[in-house]
Image 1: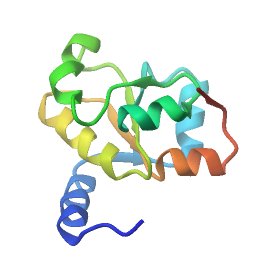
Image 2: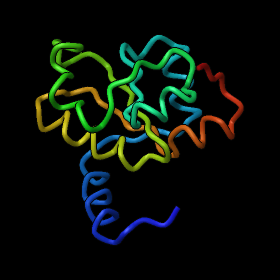
Image 3: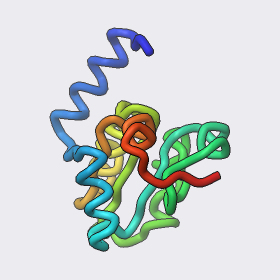
Image 4: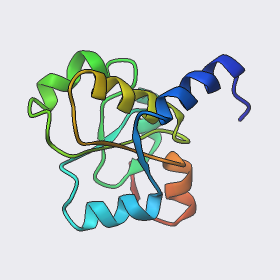
Length: 122
C-alpha cells in the first residue's frame, strides 16, 4: 500500500518517540508473559475478519477515549499492532502522551504476524 507523504511524516515523527519491536520479539514477549495487554488497533471490520490469537480490540479511532477504562494502570505492559505498524505507532505515541509508560508498537503489524505463520483467530 502506498501512503500519503503527510501521513508518513506523522508516523515517522511518532516512531522517533515510541518503542517498536519485531513480530518475533512480540511473540517472545507474549509467550514469556511480559505483555499484559495485546491490542489490535485496526478498524472493527479488520479485526472481525481475523486477528492475532489472544489479541483484544481497541480501534485507533477510539483508543484514546476508552483505554483508561480498559487499562487504568498506566504502567502495565501494552503491545499494539495494526495492519503494517503505522497506526500502532501513532496509537503508541498517543498513549505515551496520556501517561502510559510501557507501550510498544509491533513493526510490520498483522501482515508480518501472518507471514511468520503465528497463530490467528476469528
